[in-house]
Image (cartoon, rainbow, N blue to C red; front, side, top):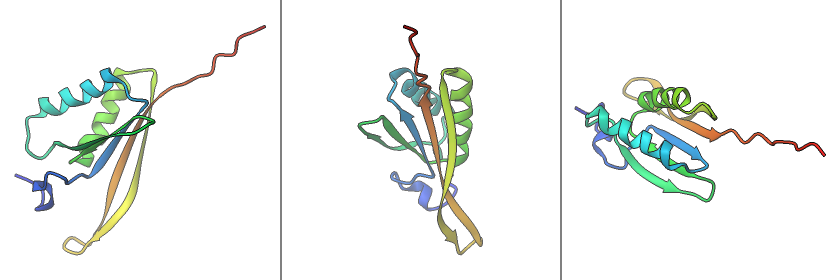
Length: 115
């Protein structure tokens, strides 16, 4: 059962997972983990391909944050950064609602060659 009436909308999202740069292995890991959940409340709303990588719109903020931790444990050479942005104030629950951004970026350490 959806958390709210908004969650039944196929375009609904609470979080964005950003892969910078795009990596097929990481993307498949995310897709397989979501399929493994087998729930109606967690789904990919949209996948947006950018020049710098890919944005994956997820319906559950809590799941996106936990998935970020799983990604960090699995892919050691990537860096995780989680931020949140104020979206709106819920009039029904008197709470502030936020959208999370989980940025998963490949470490690009510059190797300095000695001359």
